[in-house]
Amino acid sequence: MLNVCDQFPFVRSRLQDIYLDSAATTQRPEYVTKKMLALLESGVSNIGRSNYSSAERWKAVYSESREIVKSFISGTRGELIFTSGFTEGSNLLATSLSRFNLKPEDEVLYTPRDHDSFTKPWLKAAQAENSFKLLPVERDGYGAVSVDDIKNSITANTKIILVTHGHNVSGRLFELSQLRKSIRQDIWIVVDGAQSMSHTKIECDNWGVDAFIFSGHKMFASFGVGGLWLSTRLFDVLQPVKFGGGGIEGPQVFEPGTPNLDGVLSLKLAVEYLNEIGIAEIEDYLKSLTKYLYENILQIQHVTLKYDIRLHTLATMLPIVSFSVENISASEVGDVLSENGIALRTGTMCTGITTGNLDGLVRASLHIYNTKSDIDSLIEYLTFMKAY
Ligand SMILES: Cc1ncc(COP(=O)(O)O)c(C=O)c1O
Image (cartoon, rainbow, N blue to C red; front, side):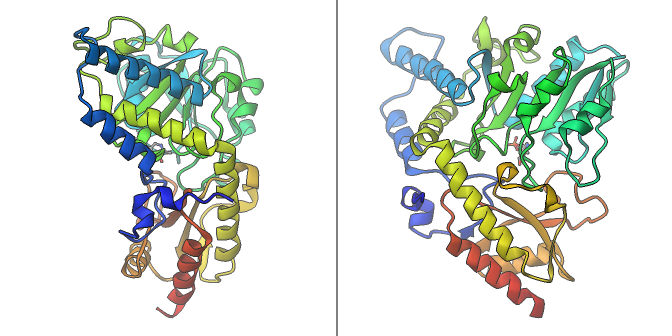
């Protein structure tokens, strides 16, 4: 049984509400914040411009961080570009590939209810004159895309498949290991890894994907940093779309200007922290908490889940549960919970999943600093809400 609450000052000192919004951003463990502060206070230097000892030391931190993160996502047969976060990585890929690589007959498959930061850059690029075709994957009727759905949408012109690994509303994990085996080898698979990165083992090389995109702030690192990992074959053809001072070869070609050293350092420390606890242990703990949340929330008659949980198995479950409460708007539910010391997300959560329901849903999302007692508090207030 994982017991790491004490490693998070935020939780230890009960400075804020019971935090059930980790899908939006995670809290930071002391391991990351303290080590970061100590290193920054020991003196910083810009890298790639000078070769005095401190500059060399920070250059080493920067390149070591890249290797540590690559190894964490099992992506040694590819390159990792540091970005300002998921959204920048997603825009870089869509902008560059649509400008330099895709032809009007090429088809890109996407899933309409995926996160806007994943789909919008491609929707925008597809609007340009003589652009590629952006086509939706037909769903299986259960509110989640399957490998077969994707397979059935592929044609001779399919060039790219956009697939979300962990959905930020349904919490469902897509079984990436099955996809490459089922489709043509030349199709590029681009993965939204924003939600899965700190929850489950990431295996870019083994899965045979071509891009894996993530944000640091959802995995215990800082805001303003993230990564775009690319398979060697995709990296070799990708052209930069931003220019400035700095690297002239390798991934640094895509990182013009002074690098975000604070952010990259926080990524390295966050990965060290995740490795120290063990991703398998994190996964087991969060699956048992999620199961507990489902078991309890499903008992409340006036709470409805907005997607089909018949597709949810323990193997494909992230600690994210979205729901609505009968006759009470999502924002009102959020307000009542907030008044009672519970912080969670309400709204449309940047997806089209709540189409036709402008107020959106309520989402509870967990991480390793949550306990059954947090869930009990949520369940208690939700149960009480019938009389509200
Ligand atoms: C599934 C998914 N993809 C992409 C993003 C975008 O991440 P960011 O806002 O950090 O760029 C999010 C953030 O909520 C997300 O949940």
